[in-house]
Image (cartoon, rainbow, N blue to C red; front, side):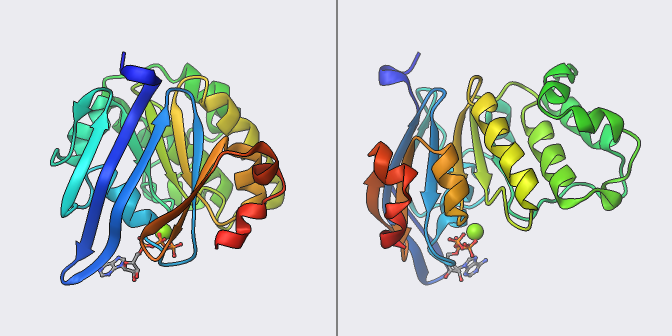
Length: 231
Ligand SMILES: Nc1ncnc2c1ncn2[C@@H]1O[C@H](COP(=O)(O)OP(=O)(O)OP(=O)(O)O)[C@@H](O)[C@H]1O
Ligand SMILES: [Mg+2]
C-alpha cells in the first residue's frame, strides 16, 4: 500500500508540443477513493496533463508515481493494464460495434469478463447491449466509456470533461455515479461545469496557462464555487 494512501503522485511535470511549452512544473496527487477535480479555461493544459499521466503523450520531464511505481515513459496500454485509465473528452466509442462488442474489446484487453459491476452502475447498458455505438445518445456513450474503463478494476480514473454536451438530468445522474465509483477507484475529473465539479469533488486544482495556481480544500469554497475566481 502506498504511503498516506496516495495512489497517484505527479511531480514537476512539464510538457510541450514541439517548441511550445504548455504545462509547467505541475504537482498533483490523489488518494485512494478520493475525488479530485482540475478546473481551468479552454487551452489551460488540462487534457495535456491527463494524457501525459496516462502515457498517451510524452512529457518532457517530471515524475508520475502510481501505486508506488514510476510509470513515466511506460506505454499507454501498460499504464491502463496497471489500473490507471484515461477517459477521453471526445466520447469515442467504436461506432460500428455494438455495446456488447465494445465491452468485449475491453474484456479482452483487461482479462476481466465480469460485467456485473458495469451494469450495477449503468443498468441501461444492459438494455442497449445490441445497439451500435453510432446510435447511442451522448449520455449513453459516456456510460459506455466509463463502463469499459472500469473493467479490470482500475485504481485511478482520469475523466476528461465528463459532462460536455450532456443534458442536465444526465449530469445529475453522473454526480451519483462518480460518488459510487469512488468507493472502488480514485477519480480525477477535468471539468468546466462548476456546479457539477462542486457536487463531485472533495478537492480542486485550478490551472491557468499551464500552471497550477491554486489548490482548494475548503468545503464552503467548493460548495459555493467561489474558486471560479481562479478561472
Ligand atoms: N496536438 C497539439 N499540437 C499543438 N498544440 C496543442 C496540441 N494539443 C493542444 N495544444 C495546445 O496546448 C494547449 C493546452 O491544450 P489542452 O488541450 O491541454 O487544454 P485544455 O485545458 O484541455 O483545453 P479545453 O478545456 O479546451 O479542453 C493549448 O494552447 C492548445 O492549443
Ligand atoms: Mg481538454
